Structures are given as C-alpha cells and as structure tokens.
Length: 414
Image (cartoon, rainbow, N blue to C red; front, side, top):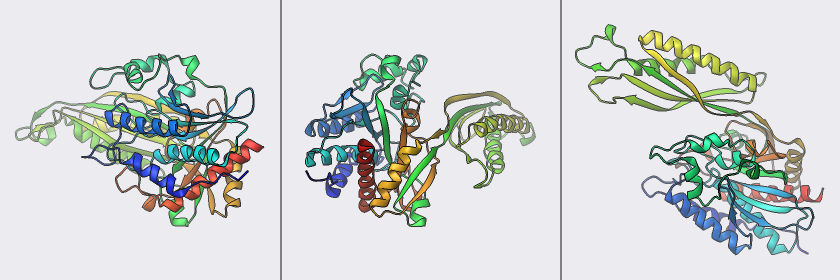
C-alpha cells in the first residue's frame, strides 16, 4: 500500500478556488453570516461530498466532514481552521488550514490507507470578529465555552446569534451536546501572520503557546458643541480623550523581551458621535484588543488600561462612561506531545523549524479546553495578514501540509 502523499497542485487549486468567493468590491472578504460566507460553505460542502466525508453542521455552526477510522470505540483526529475572513482580509488566513484538512483526506483516500482514528475535517464558524461581537463561535461551542446567554447577542440588524446559527444550518444549540469529548488530538495549520519565519528563512513554526485576548469597549462622554465658537479651553471633547488614551497606551506598553511575558494592545475600532466636521465630538467609543501569553499580565494590563482611561478622561474634561469586557480568552499552552510529533515530522522532511508563541488567537485555543491541540505555522510574505497583500508561496504551503500529514500519521500510529 503506497504512503499517503499530498498533491501540491490540488492543494493550491482548491485554496485559490475558495479564495475567489469574495465580495468583489473588497477582496478578499467572506465574513461569517453573510451570503458570501454561505457560498464558501457550499463550495466546501461539495468538496467534502466528493471525498465521501459525509458533511454536516453541528449545533455550534461548524461544518464537519468525517473519514471513518478502524478503531472502536471511535476517537477522532480533528484537523481544520476557519473559512471566514475579516473585511478586506486575505486568501490564506484560516482558509489554508481548512484546505489542508481536505488535502489530508484526499491523500489518505488516494493511498487506500485507513487511520485507526476517525479523521474529522472542520471549518469552524466565525473565528474572526463578526456582527455579533464574538470571535471563535464554533470552536467555543466544541470547547464548552459558548454560553447560552451569548446566543442572545444581537447584530446591528437586530437578529440574535441564535438566529444566526440557524441560518448557517445548525440544529438548535445544546451546550452539552456541542461540547466534545471524543477528540484524541487536534491539529491546526495556519499562516504565521508575522515576519519571523520569512526573516529567519525557516520552513515551519511549531506553536508552543497561543495568546489570550481581551477585547474591551471604552466610551468617553463629553459635550457636543460648535466647532467654530467653542474655545479650546472650554471644550469637553470626547475624541481628544480617546486620542490621549491611544497614545498613552502605546507609550506604556513594555518593549519585547525574552525574559518577560508577551504583551501587546491595539485600538483598531473607533466610533465618533455625532461624527460631523463642524461639531466637537460629544461621545467616542473605542475597542482595545489586549493580548498576552500570560494570564496574570492580561489581568494587570486590564487594570492599567482603566487607569489610563481615567487619566485621559480627566485630561479632556470628559466622563469615562463605560469600560467593559466584550470577549475574553485565556492564554493556551499547546500539547507538548503533539508539538513533538510536528517537530519530528518536519525533521523527517528536512524542513527548517522553530518553536514560536502565537500572537494571534486561534480556534485551537478553545479546542484545547477539551482535547490536546497543536498548531503549525507556515511563512507569511513580509509578515502581512488581515489585508489583501497576505501571501504564502505554494511551496511553503505544500511543505507545511506535508509536515501536518506526517504528524497525523505519527500520532495515529503511536
């Protein structure tokens, strides 16, 4: 019986086909709970049917395909990522990991080799931020972290997340049924989304830890007034407070250090009211994305952020109307024995590698709550991601998927 081998041309062709399903005015965009996302899901479902993977959607909205194994009772190796994107995102973030799973299934079927474990391919629902303000919805469900109260979150159009799940074909949500206890191992291939592998001329990165993420909403309340007649000294400018906070936070963040926890924060979303050129802003809301691989640092910097926001409000003579946590995930350690399978697989293929901490959040972090999980990174050109310029070379992706396949075979036979 021949050894399973990936077909690089098939892998790349599938990736490009799925990427082409995009909002034409904002490539490459396929946000969760939109018609384009549904179109991408239909494409994936058809590929799963061609591979006889019996596709279906679970109650957390994940699209799953299944290649049965030989062992009973059934335990599965879960391989996948997400097919949704941020607006104007890229062709690789998340998508590469889903297509990698399809390629593994195709290679196994072509070789005639049957794993002892069932191989399950996953397109996790809504890993990226979406209209319901909750990331990693599908993997939260599998990991037991999708709470019933979250289902009542509303989109700007007024529909609930519960309704959104129904729209993607999910049966009624059952938190106990969605939480999985049959996963023996989970592997996620992903682009690095940073410059380390490319700059060091490495083929793959073995992820040891995934950062925890807190997204916090901050609202400053001042007083709207006329831009031409209100003196600077008398203004209660909510945007000035927000600007002060953004710069103060940037200055306060520690420089990178191998001896200290990784901590970084970003303000990428800002809403100004009334948002008119001749009106002093009366209200500003901003979202802070705070990340660290250390739980204590996340807590400490959440408190530090409150202090900085209070100081910014006082400096601009406005009120700090709100500071609340929108979503939170804790730092996650990847399973050491699975990481070692990935290292050994890369060595056997002659691939240059390095252990890494992921500064981005991933579905694997939530799966790790209920099963051993590991991640493999492939290079990103210039470290760019979440933009149209996101790119990974075909050979780089093929190398990563070959290592992924070899690691799955090693784990299955161990």
